[in-house]
Length: 235
Image (tube, rainbow, N blue to C red; front, side, top):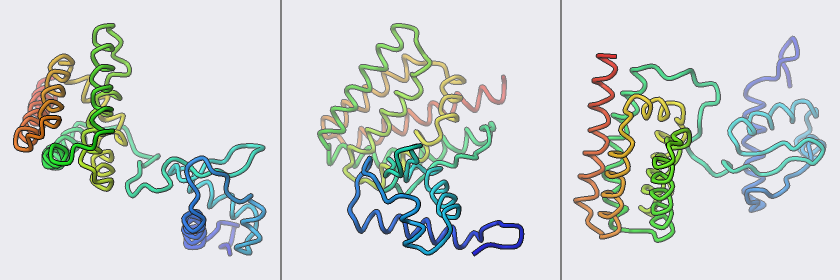
């Protein structure tokens, strides 16, 4: 079960992590539900307790489970996600910022068009709240949370498409890359224009205008990309 020196084989840990996720799915456990104890899992999979702990720590790093000291193992918020953040990612480079925006400009406009077609009501209501929160943060001069709220708007826009996988893909290049998006906001700096463009996108989606929603989203992201490129080339 381990290589010389006490290092557990990667394949074993991967197998254990996968088996535990399958067990969670088979039992139809939801986020926040308590899972089996570490000792019970060790007995089930016939491995040592430290090996189970190491496999659980891998799952915890992705948010699939939570280890609560003195309480046990619980299902985490990311247990069903297909796209996950890299907890060891390096600080964003200029090239990384540009690549992220280019990816978003390709992915998000068609998703906005689908959102205008489907118009999932819960997501539309969340978009309204995101816009109101952004307006309050701009008015108060509290910009610390503005990047997060702006990304929440784009996530809500994707969720309005009714396609959970597309929503995760969009989230992978927005919310998951929170540090990069904060840096983009810092460089771009035109907070009121961002808000106005977000409002226009929301209005198009709410009205069911697929072509306008797609065009406005593309123009919004292309505009940010132009500014970022200019600022990076002429700091």
